Amino acid sequence: PVNRLRRTNVDRVLAQWSHGLKYPQGTRYEYNPVDPSLIGLALREATGQSLSNFASDVLWRPMGAEMDGAWLTDSLGREDVDGGFLATLRDWGRLGLLVANGGRANQKQVVAESFILKCRETTGIFDYLAPGKIEGKLLKAGYKNFFHLPIESATWLKFQGAEGQTILADQRTGSVLVVLSASGQEGYNGTYESIFADIVKLG
Image (tube, rainbow, N blue to C red; front, side, top):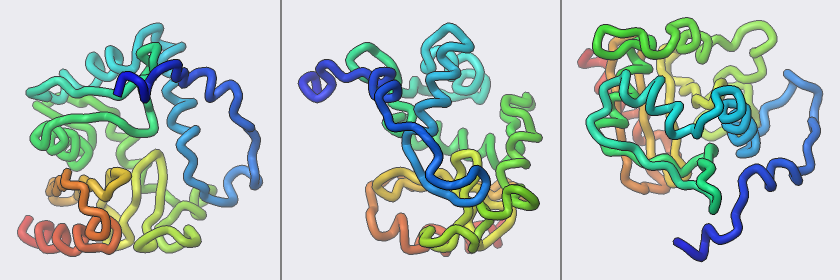
């Protein structure tokens, strides 16, 4: 791990990246790990603190996390924003519940409800991001604000890890499913969505 991180620099990578839009804005979805990294850079500069400290103050502690999270960083301590955040099963569940409950946790509005609701809004200029509209997207899901939008329900939001780790949150019933095992196929073939549909019926 020490050698893997030696001389790595997130900001240098972003500065040297070949920026520019391949397609006119608002016409085509293309997943790109540089996008969250640029947002992370903007947040660091705007808040004057590390993303770890910022997230701890505005999200992790207010939502009632019981354990510290951990973030992979470059050699200078800057967080890898497009992945590499680690937490316990119970705290991932708390994050899922926060999303399912419109940004609320412990009787507090931790994240603006309007933001959570807008994550599923794919009308008008966001129509190209709607479920079923993104060419080649697995399970015909949509995608907005870094959430996958399952086609199975207009009230579901999904976190998806690189190895199939999954958090599904239903805004109608408040149901949440968390799967942290690196499952590969099951994380991408609709198995978890099928299980979650049965869970939501119980709600």
